[in-house]
Image 1 (cartoon, rainbow, N blue to C red):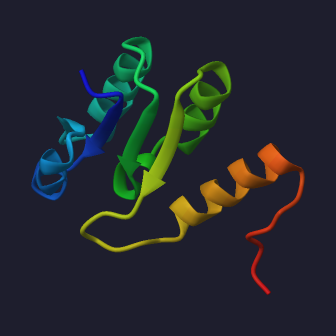
Image 2 (image 1 turned 90 degrees about the vertical axis):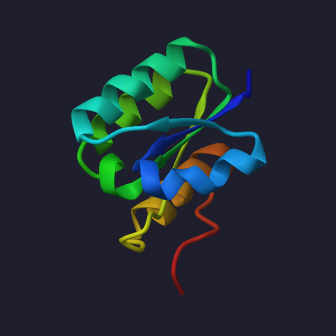
Image 3 (image 1 turned 90 degrees about the horizontal axis):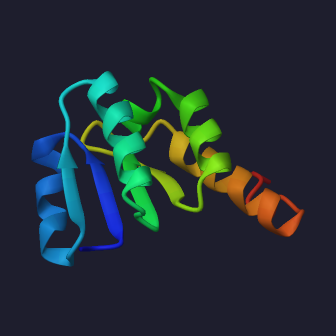
Length: 105
C-alpha cells in the first residue's frame, strides 16, 4: 500500500497513478469528505485533496488534521488555483516553526 493518497476528480488525478500514489476518485464534496475520513483511518501519511472539493469543507479538514498524524495538503486542480492550497501551507508552516515565512511582501 502507498503511504500517499490523492482525492479528487477522476480525470484530473489519473495522471498521478504513475507516481505510485493511491488514487481516490470522487464526484461530490460529500464523497470527498467521506473518503478523506476513510484514508485517515487507514493510516495514510500524506493525503492530497484538490481545491475544488477541499473548499467545500475546509473546517472539517482543519479539525481532521489536528486530530490525525496525517499531513493533509490541498492542491490546485484542473480549474486552476484559488490560493486555498497556498494559504493552508502558510498556516501549517507558521504553526510548525512559529513564524509566517510565506507571507506576501
